[in-house]
Length: 187
Image (cartoon, rainbow, N blue to C red):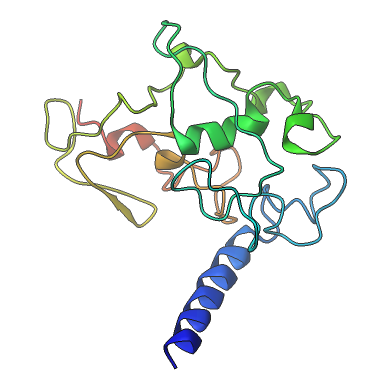
């Protein structure tokens, strides 16, 4: 009985995530961004069996996908171990998506961020959210997700790759308002 309940819960979560990503910019089955075309919406990034466990916290990560580690942060040559950021940079760092197992490169330069993140929003294990500190809101909720003090800021803190309903031009921001910055910052 317990196994049945767990199986149903997993199926519900997978179904909900798949529904959110279907027909989005990250639905590689329908959008033509990758070749060869994956057999399902989720399988490009995730697999249910024999998933990679090399990076803790990545949900069922497809072992044929590669991470790109940022080489510079805040103008230093420090590598950063941030699973969400590494995952995103697998495609968005250089556009050489052969590392991710596809033969289709990203040719739109606006979708590339490189590996030097010194000119981007700070991300990394050293960038810890401290709610209520000087310059920060006392509570932060982005796209229905409440952030907690102690959260390491990474790409997925602000961006939701599974959200098919973001407004065009908002770069998949979790909760786009006219001024997204004030969701976290109060100055």
